[in-house]
Structure formats: C-alpha cells, structure tokens
Length: 361
Image (cartoon, helix red, strand yellow):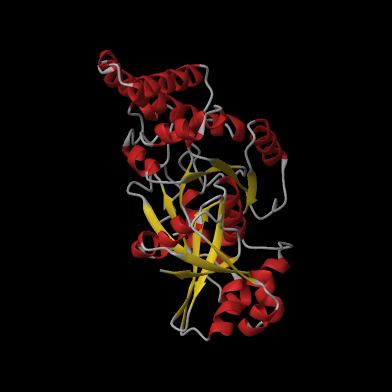
C-alpha cells in the first residue's frame, strides 16, 4: 500500500466526482448535500514505468505495483464538530487516513446547491480546517485529563506526554494546525498515536469547471492561502477528469493533450501525496514476481525487508542493492557485476528511491 488519502471538504464541492476521477469507480455524485454518508473506498495501482523494465530483465511472471487508497468522506459543515450535519461520523474515517486532500469548489453552477450563501474558496477551506481543529482540541483535552491523573506516579514517560499535550493544546488554542508545530520525531509520534486530525498532511484540490482548466480568481485566492500555510494546491477539473478515467488507457493521453493537460489528475495527486508524506518506492524481483513497495524516506533496509515479509526483517543478513538508473543503462545482471554496480549492505543501509533490493536471509 502506498498511502491512504481521505477526500474531504464541504458538501457539494465535487468530492465524489473527483473520487470517481481518481479511482475510475462510479459512485453517486448528487447536487444535494450529504449524498455521501458512508465513505466510498477505492484502491488504485500506482503506475511506474520502472516496473516493466525490471520485470523484463528478471523474466518475472507477475508484476505488482504499489497501490493508493482513496476514501471519499462525508461532507463537513460549519458546526460539524458539535454535531451539525453528519456530525462526528467523519471523525473515524479521517483518522484512518495518512493524508487529506481537501476539495474546494472554484466554480459556479446554479444546478448544484452550495451550503454557504456565496462562493468563497478561502472561507470554505477555513470552515473545514476550523472544524478539524476544534475536534483536535476536544481530543487533546480528553487525553490531558487522563494523563494528568497519572502525573503523581512520577513516570518520566507520562511527564513527557503531558508536556507534549500541553504544547499541542496551546498551539491549537491559537488557531494553528498541528502540522505547523515544531516537534521532535518522538513527540510527533506520540501525538500520532491519538490520531489528531490537523497533524495529518493536507493539500488542496481546487475543483474548476471546463472553462477554467488552468486558473481563475477563486483558484488564485486558494493558491495564495495554501502558500501562506506552506501547503500545496492543485487545479483539477473533476468533471473532465472523471470522463477521462472512463476511457481506455491508450486513449487517455490523446484526450489529455486535447485539453492542454500534461498529466492526469491521478498522477498529480500521487506525486503530491508522496512529496508531503516523504515517501519513496523500492523494488524486489525474482522469476516469480517484480514488486514495487512504498516506504518513508530514511528507512533502513532491514525494516524495509519486513514490509516484504516479516521473516525477512527477523532473519535479515544482508541486501544486494542495484540502482535503477544503472540497471536501466546496462540491462544485464552479469554486466552490473562486472562494472561493480551491485553493492552489498548491512541492516543500517538507508533505502533510496528506485533501489532494487535482493534480500538475503
């Protein structure tokens, strides 16, 4: 699995249409609020041209790409954290994700109702962000109350958690998401364990109509808002991309070119997700299967081996590593040996993007 991306936003901003575009599934997309009540889930393969090269070299019978899971989450409205709209139904669905794509409406359509009286993408984004922040305040306050009772025990771990929770509470009280709080890695992990929503990386999808495929004043305002918050904003025509997703793969490129687009919306979202989550891809291969795997940057090879199989991590001895660029250039394992381009590493080697790893146990 690459990562789990939750699609969030106000009702009727095009979340389900964009979900369809990304997953090529046909879920209901209505012009009325709260069409999506239970979350729709779609798993898509991450296209990677490197896989075919490795498969050809090893003569693998099977090729398995890494995958990305999208979750189309019910629309949030002002007051959702206090039970408005569908209330807290969204909470558990968002907590299960690694990153959030917030869809923001940047088009006018008299046939599609909007839950706010006017179209204002920045205000709409802030409504969603504020509801997530309020929910985090509630989670932190409950956790603090529980941890406070154990302070008298004198545990250093409890004291550390108490201090981190206080930092988080003060930051949230100032109206700032936890993504903007500077923490040590172990402190971040501590907060991740209680599934805080504003700790999740978020990017924006400015959903436009077919007359504004590049930009409009609403998109520009949202992009500026994203920049100020050190976030990414993608421009995306959900309706057009949903139509493209239903075409045969060989016809999609021509359709994109005709629209003046250089890549699909799915490719944009995957690239953005990998960047904000600091993910990379490595490969394993034998005669049976060539497989792509997704891991975080700076992962040691022994831990990466555990992703392939738990026994590989437990019984790890060494790893033979081939850089994809070398493999693509020479297209021969004996030649790579001859050139000294197959390196042997112990358990502390840091896996790099594009590594082909042959694990020895």
